[in-house]
Image (cartoon, rainbow, N blue to C red; front, side, top):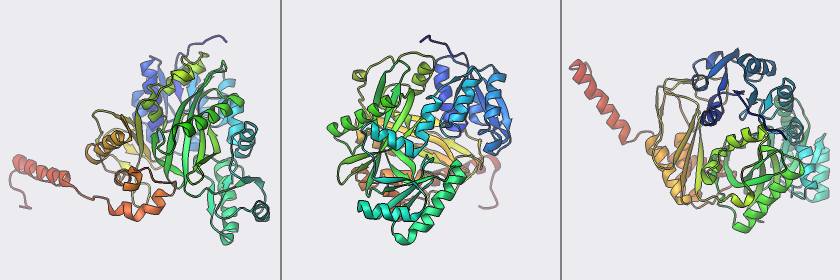
Length: 486
């Protein structure tokens, strides 16, 4: 296969993912094109790019989800490749095909692979063919009587999980605890599936109690080479959305780690996967067994912690693969030698998870040894109400988990200050200081089970707040003389 050299990349995204991709492009001296909607005209990713194209009004359907506008922006700006980042159209096979049909290079897996893995039912069938363990379940469910029949025949007990077949990202999933909830949950899942994915097909699976979410990072080229970059633990979640991730997983021993990673590699080789992708598993702590969940056919939000423990640039690998180059390493060359943690800073109320949009009036970003920040904002920037509330990823590393946690505590507790909007910072700090989390004793229900306790640990004010208040008063007196409040 002939290598090609990408001359300019349009990033079909915004915020954190767009900025992350631009960093690698700068390293490689590849010019970039940003796209932006009306409220994003002064966004961080727009200033960072070499060129920027306006693509429409605020609603995503008018801008970041408009395939024609994105492809036209690439052609108009002289870009010859498109990287979708994560979210929006990153796992849309129609968009991938449209990019290719326009004569542009798609930096991602083939449209056919995206299509196969985007259908949870088909993905599960392919996993079974590759001898990958899957959760007991039933596919293409049309009514609740089929669910009851399956549970009786297979002796499946509650709880169960009803999922959208075309779902992803934790959406279109409802847990059912008993018979009384089944009809409502079934109707709710079909409705969410139709609204979010345009497909109301659902499947049902046994719910794994005390489950842990573990995923394997894969990179593969167009020459048949498939390599795993080990696993990440993504168990700390809220409403099936990841909150904290770490690599490696504290749940696994070396033998189980090797089995899990090579199982993921075998699956990706079977389906002909190329570029970066992730195989997600649910791990049953009680039985020490793992089961296939899905394949994410894109760059993952949490890829940065894998980069920290391996020293690799996954975005750079994606560009290499898109150019037709073979992977520059073999499986035996991958030797993780650190522990890394990532927390997701969302503009949300840490007690209610309600969105908190507005202007960031102050932003102090953590620095120091073993800290990595992926930010989509700057001090003075606006967080608009139209898009995902994620505005920063904070990652820390250490020689072991204890070291990485210590650095994260310093970064969240002392070095990060965000004013103007509410963030998840207090909740994240409360989680990493919780004894059960420190001991590695948690499941996907950790936040749900400990929420009241976690909130009780929030510190509304600290000594630094009081010092800053005094400093402001002193400054006022020094500059303006005695004040009315004195």
